[in-house]
Length: 157
Length: 157
DNA sequence: ACACCTTCGTTCGAATTTGAACAACAGGAG
DNA sequence: CTCCTGTTGTTCAAATTCGAACGAAGGTGT
Image (cartoon, rainbow over all chains, first blue to last red; front, side, top):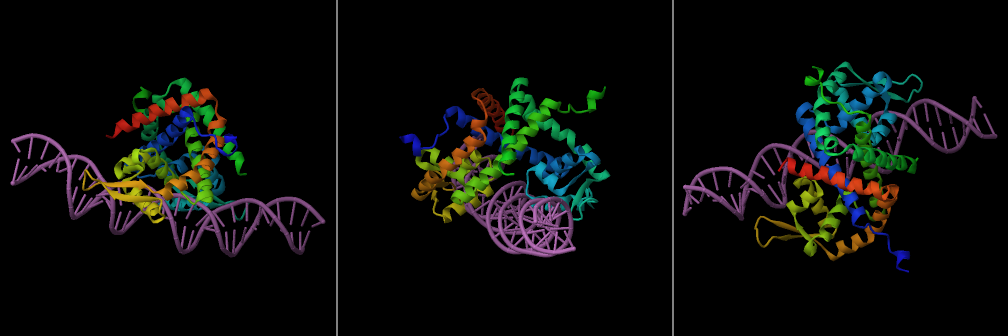
């Protein structure tokens, strides 16, 4: 009857996976943040905005769409896009099909900045994560965390 | 000769692993943050402080040690410990062996708060991550991300 | 004992993040 | 057309985060 009120705690393997995930995530973020800031003056978040825009058709996305891809708050995105706009890396356009809509678009300068910042960033991601893992580990990671993400996306429609 | 200056970009599998990691990490953090705040009024960071303290001998740790385990900045920890101290969940003691040292210690109230907050948190971690993955996936994740963390710990001694 | 370099935790200012509130608009049911 | 509900992006205050600078103390070599 202990199982009725007692939660199912994590066994050692499960705890190791969870702690490994949290720790690796924090360490990676800190390291990447530092590298990007030193090399290009960009925060990781700002860099990701440029990446997502450059991957989108027309190098542009609506604010809400972009916020979803980045997994950040709408207000947080408003702030960062304003920063990037001041830096000349991103421009705001109004959406033709929706008067409320705002489209963030990569500028030439933004594309250039990305071209300059990407190599160092990718190299570090490779050094700290990709190249540390085997092909099989990478596949499991991609598939597993893909499922986790999918689950979370559905959760709070 | 293209490989001399051109970085090794991520192939589709590698990119999927990296994006899956970043996305899952962000989504999980957001979700856990919300749950903890609503259920117990704690931030994820504050919760983690209580966890690490309760796992330490004497329910206490020195500030620097704790900051390392949490993977956060010293100043950030100072702030959060102050918050937890105001809430009566943590107390500051001076270190016997080092006049400069400050020891953060879990109070009875802090232990009780953790006892109350842990079940809901663990249940959600289980629902969103642990139970979504197979035993094998968890093992790979633990081992792989453990290696990644170890690598990062050594990097900037 | 002395200088020298490192470590400890805090303080400070600046930057960032968040959720709630908001006004304006979209889209459908009637 | 006319409500009515949901969406969109921004603003706002409050909370949090970080790195640099700091005073104070540890530890080492001479």
